[in-house]
Length: 424
Image (cartoon, rainbow, N blue to C red; front, side, top):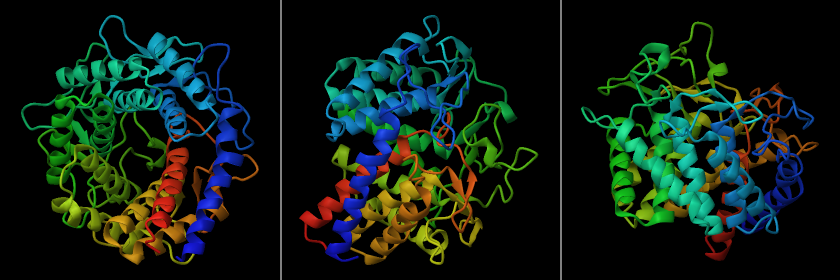
């Protein structure tokens, strides 16, 4: 990558964000009748009509609007859209009897699934903290801090450390197996790190810093291998567990029939590994902690993705593969491209290793050429290795705007920093 390349890639991302991606969402996401956000769109960008509002999609969209506003996009409208989503979250998702946030509402805002799922609580903390960082409105961080306290009381698992993840409405653990009550996952703990980072940035409270450091230690010592690769699922006492499908779960349509993944005990996600690397770096920066002890793990995650995950023939990054072996799922998923772009730019900034710039370039070009559905403005959810759509929706409860908008903003910021620091 030359300085001219860097400038061109930044210009491409700026044009995509301002002319395609943000306009896609700003023109259709507000539910003016019921409050909150409409988050289900078909391949043409038309509302596909699902009668649901998930905690995940509402929180992620609140985060996205807040994040875009904090970085100066939308001429103030993103801040207004964020406040619109905040009001719906506070008015409709909060459980007045048991505390916490429901998992699923219908489109009108009535509870449909009242379970308390830690994955959802974590994204709400992340979004609410980001809202305060972006707007200065203390309702966000105050609600996030209340949720944080509930998570410590009801979800913290004191015998072995970490957090349990699946609960009934009254915070009783869900049954084992498909109920998820006997599992701890990398996905949830990584996103708690992300949420606690934002919460500490908004609150500057020592308890939030302490719990952030605890979860970093747990992730590093329990959930990653010597190869820099994450292990998806564990038993409560930290034995590696087969990656099974839960009754209430994210991404379950990526599982084969029978509810368990192939190669369930030797399976890692390139996107999660690289996302963890840059989120860890951000957490350490927020804490003002020394990054040096963590550099081997960060490099391991990046190098593993380059060795096994980057497709040098067709571009982009594969879905997943073995901890020390080739990819086993050669499809290209939208969020993995987004997170690898951010992570590789962070890797170059930290280590001055041009392999990370080359990996970024490979993914960037694939995204611009294949991943973005330019006639609508959003990204395809899942492509073949060659770049043909497998899934064709633009958005649903599991595929909204958080990965795409965040990554484009992050990459614009990082490319600008590289140009300003004259690292090219």
